Image 1: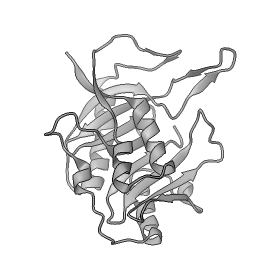
Image 2: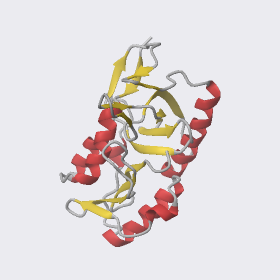
Image 3: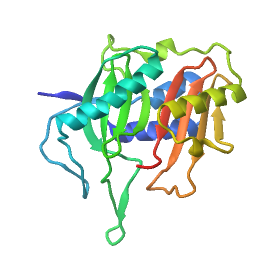
Image 4: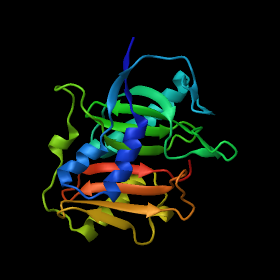
Length: 228
């Protein structure tokens, strides 16, 4: 049987692009979404030269799903169901075979989609939230989070930063990682993306916290690759 799965590389690139590429505010939404495709189930657990567990135990999935439930309630202000999609390599964190010059994607994460159309990545080792953002719609009837984004001019860049920091902490970001002045990207002043880079971040190990919100207070995306 086939299942809907994330194209994890597209989701990763999309999240980074959200904070680094200028475009229309509504365009940010399109960049952020995952590309959902149909894929046949495979028993092979290898990804490039790395190994991740593609068949996590029911206990591990349930534990991660509990984290999703907590995050979804914070996001939506209500209890929301979610479904497990797949176990996949975390494209933000890689190791490298210096002899062969090959990246080894050994860090795994579990992906979920909630009933309101948001996607979640949970680190399979720490149960930390790695990323949250709107999932792309396969069918016309699929939930469309962007349709309810609030662009009411409720916050300024500075007052929205305080809201974003509080939201990031609620999703599990260490408050100490949100100290100092973040990089800030915006377009037309209708949405802002705040990013704090870790000094140890490299091209193959992108360690940062980033959160994007509309001036009305809607979450566009959240990413945290610290401590995983």
